[in-house]
Picture (cartoon, rainbow, N blue to C red):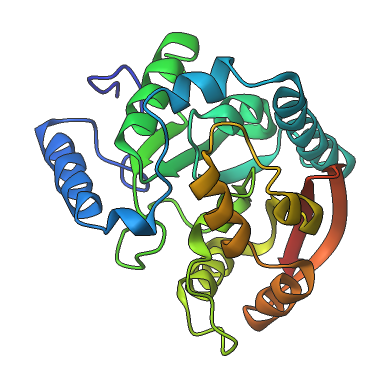
Amino acid sequence: MVDKSGVSHPRKDVLERPRDRAAEVEDLLVSRELAREPSRDRVGYRATWLARYEHGLDEADERLKRVEAELVEEALRRRGLWGSVQGYLDIGTCTGRYLRHLRDAIAPAGRIVGIDNNVESILTTREKLRRAHRDDSRIAVLLRDFRHADSPIPGAPFDLVTCMMSTISHFGKNRQPSFEDPLQGTLRRMSDLLAGGGLLVLSFWSRQACEARDLLSIYDRRDRESLAAWTPGPDELRRRLAATGLAVSESLQPDPRLELWLCRHR
């Protein structure tokens, strides 16, 4: 079934119903809820940030994006997972970069779900996929706020979950020593959505990047300060993952600015 944006959806009983009027209303309601969030709790992207992220980053940032994606692909191939993943969830899909890059890692009868809480990102990603992969019925792109446990993500459990380019930092505001905070809720939800034997791949800004505020150029000075403060350090993140039943099975570093971890249930 193909929706109004041209994106088709597999197994609509498991994933999302066709993009009919009811689905459009759902998007509208979600976007209104997100609009009520205090602006200080969100990164204040510049108006052209999506276009700049996709096509206008400097050489260092473009290399960082490329190497991060290459390492994820290599890790999946090394584990013999390429082409056999049954369910894939990308958290903070942005422009759908990973939905496109890892599409061939998903089995022909598998499912691919990308979520984001930014309406512009969702519309942009749907259009990109409509143009490039109109006939791929496995893909669904959903407007969701991952922080809210009552925001449903159909298709779980997933064999592969990704949260890339330090998207995890966006959940780290007001971290508490007790771990009773939104970041821990986010990690717990990742663990819950991950199938037994599944793989969680996440990246986060390194200490070096946070100290130097050397993050992506799409962020202004204020947002770099915020994201650096919101990013958990490696020791803290390991403890938080352990508290959800996850352990780091491999640690990679695509760039001095970025750490990349592959995690599994213990």
